[in-house]
Image (cartoon, rainbow, N blue to C red; front, top):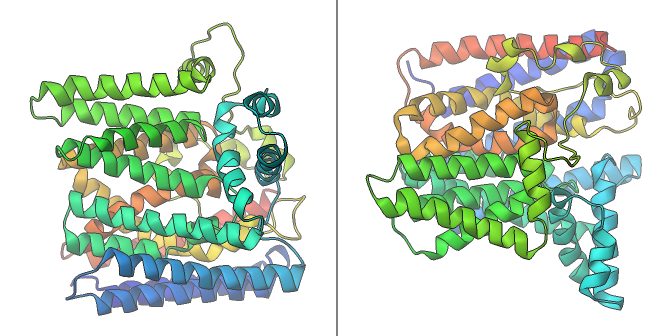
Length: 468
């Protein structure tokens, strides 16, 4: 028998409810309050029912991008209102749930607006950003443009929700080109209610824009490879430049994946095999040089490759000691090679009190409902990726996912929600393909997977609690 959307929804709901009840019963004093359990389960319940309703409604109808955008933005505003209510009225807190990088981005964006309005000059901007690395500047500059017109936190978050909804539309367009409209319908409708993607849109972090520009880069490449308008090469270069201004190592991965795909997928066309990669590379170097960041990006790129050019460069990454300081004695196992098979599925829902300094409110608590949705849907995303291995048009996307996952493993960021959200959002492109093309054993395999992943989630929370 084949797995239907109804069976998928039912099993996800039952497993999620069972795990929540089990964890709350066994580890009540070590998990967050019943308010969070209720919020996460209700948000999960609502999103998956909206997905089923949308699929039923458009089963034999054409899905338009305008309707998809409307569904996405309305659902994001709904979740935004719920989050705002819980944080503001229960905890008197902002939607930027944890500080860390968010405070830095907000402060720099605010200072840039002050310069725009009071003493604008290139020298003043250079003086302000002196000593700040290039891949920490992209998001503050975007924030400064928002703050220039709307200083309201609420409006700023709603703008991010709009950008996030545009990412859903791009997933639809990319999936249509890779597969067909039926598969694109499944992938995009699922991403329109995908809670991790939505929750991230209301936190002051750059991942929302990184997702959008990555998808724009992928779509531009696909249009360019089909001999569409040459303007797509400008979108491609611009998107990669923005990614360099947000996370260098990820931008390198995207650039390499695009160049490799252009070379191997161009059907003996010299122009596509040679000219396009060279043009993209030179165009990117010229843009970096124009903004004065070529040397910094060059040093950092070589540093990631393990080559020193005589200057120090911060290439980031977490260490075991950082996890141990937060009370996680099992941190030393975080990047074991044996965990690679699980790396595509991470992060798992975390319902335990583990960050010793932030037991009041922790960002991970607001993601657990969405991550339950992710771990079950990951089965079909991975299945879709495996089925796409023979599809040359999907090579660039598969390379991005695999290479970035390896980087996350080697840098200890494999458990980070923020750093994984990019990988997750890109993998959603393959959800519809994995769900649509089933064998007679798919339903049984998914049932077994659901049981195993439920046990894994319980063990994950057990390890986090007992590893403190």
